Image (tube, rainbow, N blue to C red; front, side):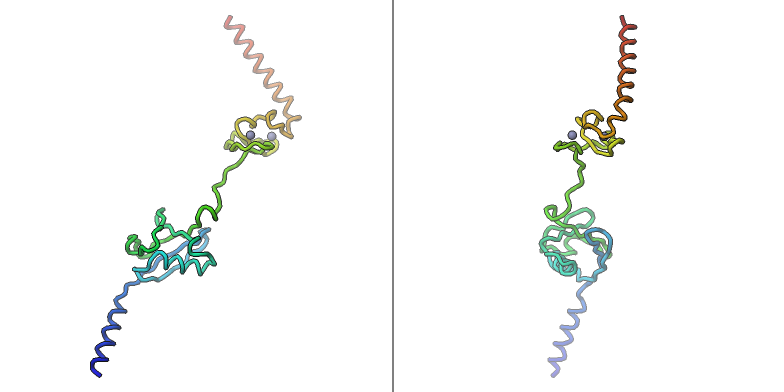
Length: 170
Ligand SMILES: [Zn+2]
Ligand SMILES: [Zn+2]
């Protein structure tokens, strides 16, 4: 009977020695943070499974990021990754399932070039154009009729001034 007592005391001691730590996990969109209390020796795969269940995702579709670093090794524990208590981890989806980085394409017909930032924006038709199509004439701007005159005048002005320069240079 004494033996049984000593056995139970041993097992209770060992389980209370298990260290736990709290971490915060931000969801994919960054809109909510889940506090989790976990044993410090929790592996990344266990944590992934836990979070995947909570978010209706496949564990294989879930990535964890800490301080900009992907926690990519499933068997590595929180301690091994040197993740401190109260650290914030980020959930991320792999690129194939996630959203591709936003790149604005030229609005002109079948043009597949990337639109230029700011200088490619047309104030007349609110399109975004590449270097080849950013001029009103080049993308056949809907507001072209209105501004045709204006740009013609501007062109004429420029030609005149160029001519003047040329004449002066002679
Ligand atoms: Zn274009
Ligand atoms: Zn335009």
